[in-house]
Image (cartoon, rainbow, N blue to C red; front, side, top):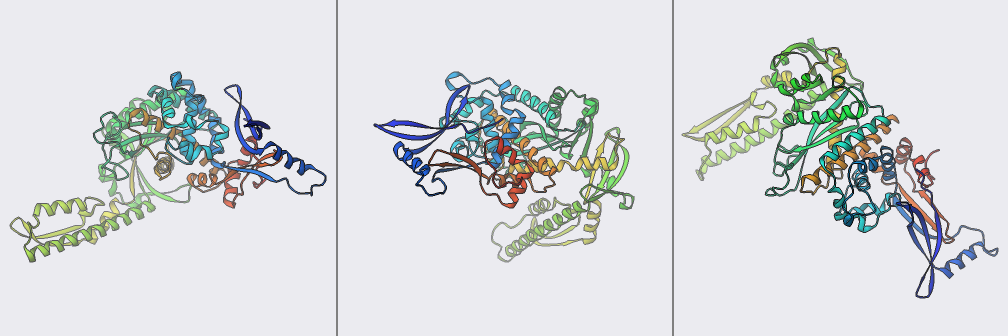
Length: 587
């Protein structure tokens, strides 16, 4: 779409005096409207300046500047371009009806969602601050015209209240179909992972069902949380489908519902068959029932199994492992076998990663140091009690419970030996020792290893390992959403419908960010997408208005990093189509 500057000068009469304005007109809902206006000054003064500027007596030189207006351009323009290519607003409006006429504005439900999506990807703000903090300072304000009263929190949610769960399913189906038209999605493999987000919903608020207390991955077990399941394409890393579920529901229990809904959407949008699909997921979603259900539906899988479920597989000597060279210059070792798991013959692959081994060993050493300090503090407290006999002292059962809690992580209880001196049921002395030989045995047996199970018997060891390691991209997307200024935050909603809508436009934002990430990857740039968007967001568009009414739109000066990123995402072409002159971009 082309966005020319249709500018003109108009005169307004106020209290008997005439004033000159620079205006830009465009069609809004099919009718001509003034969408941008800049005050130039009294008409006689402005005309005198113009006459002087073009008179023969005037010395050669540039025409005086009247106004300069800056807007954020780089990130918003790029994401707007891709949102238009995806037809996000059109897809939403196809399924979601408008609100009642008394609450309706000239913006559609899809346009509101489009604004929220770009805001979340560039500079996440609350709906109350959407206009002041972001919209009026962004190039989006001239691409999609809206007044302050249109972008209040009330007007936004008046439109979002129209979005029902069945609409979200239909929207995701059409979006998946559009993604398949624009990008070379993989035809066989899909990645699945889950996460959760804490909320600030009051404990005694019984209205929402999604926010519940559970094991929060950000360590906020004191708050209610919402869980999110995400499916991604293995080829492009594109988020294809998401689903919200209750915060207290385990991942393993939600897995069946999630892939069932996703499968229907995937089959309808892409006209595929279940036997063409291979699901890849981690150990948190693996169970006997889940694997059996996948096999009954003829869906292939590659999944991780908790190593504690198959301890005999850990006893295989590393000399029997085969070295696999990965595409990123790293390597792992793998041992393949077939064995009965839950009554069925399945292919098992034990992998050993030197990088994972070093990481887990460092974690074990850090946890050991922490427990050492806790034991020392406890021993000092017991000694002080023995000397003063003040207080109730330390019961043996209480001390044993403390130590079990401290050492249950990282297998510390296997190589820690604790001795207690007692007086009745009280502990009068505490001593301990670490068995370093046992520690080395634990490290050799448990660390750096992962067990994968699959029914893809024709896949090579390298194929299985490579596709499983792609789950790291999904985890990276989750980290982006949980960043301080990531798409998910702030989230202060307290009803299930608002939380689902929030998850929907955050999903849209992730799709746009994944597209940008692919552009960077194709240009051989290793910069992360969140840092790239941050750099692009510092590229401003300047509207320069001269005293004679001439106006130009130009981009601000670009740093070397910004030039590299802008070239990779073809920002020059986007600027030209939007009527902006990219003075500093390379040809």
